[in-house]
Length: 83
Image 1: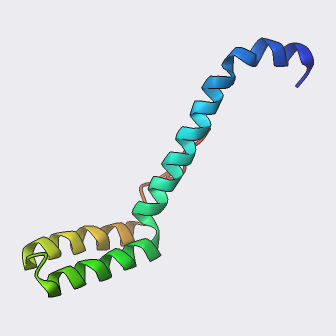
Image 2 (image 1 turned 60 degrees about the horizontal axis):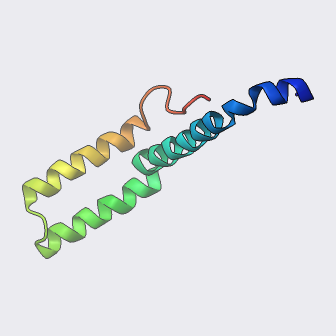
């Protein structure tokens, strides 16, 4: 990038920064929703909560169904955010 184009596009720097931060937040949220290890840990937590009585059988079954669905889907199509 030349000096002139750098000066002309300088006012857009905050916008590019916000887009970069939004992309990082999106990527982390996607990882937490669809990472197999995170899902397996959450399945274990649900099982422990059911065993201790914190969750009813129906609540645990609903949550397990959602977690298994996420595990099987490995994320929505086009999972990454393009910038």
